Length: 199
Image 1 (cartoon, rainbow, N blue to C red):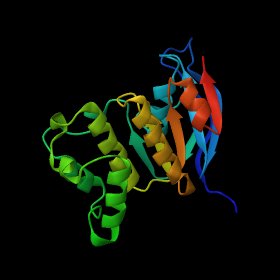
Image 2: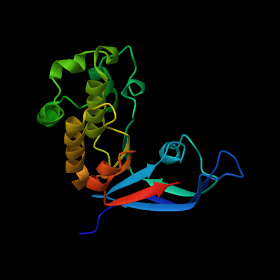
Image 3: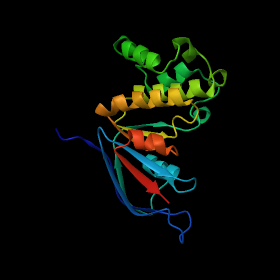
Image 4: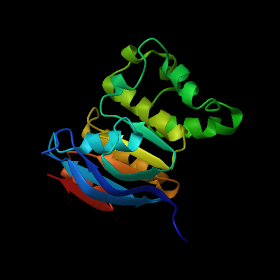
């Protein structure tokens, strides 16, 4: 069965300084069921690529075509508004998240993420970094994206939970593709179909 193409980057070029291009004629295709990792040192352009895909930065040349996407950022405290509960912020982007048709799916995700349902009634500052990152992952999965952009998703988690979370994300590759940024080469080698190294 042909898998849907969910990300198509062709001949992308981008630079903050003209004499020092971060990307020059960069191309990448990502299909449903694939997990591709962007690996590189700080300042190599990993997060810049996400910003180009999202549209907060514009390429100098080239094209980016993408399907519906969700994001999981490295710092979960920047992913949520500080004055609203987690539940309110999930309902903002997934209005039917706690409807009868999705309730079972939500409970399953909460269990797999080791989250108590009552945590969703709290505000971000009332949760630990690890709890909040797992809430961020919950929200992203409930959006049912075709493309999941993940920037260092497990940096706030201990090693055992980190690998459990990645196993959970990999479960959803049947219905989406994952583009992952990580500095953890062991994890990249363990979970990736392809690793792109940026210098």
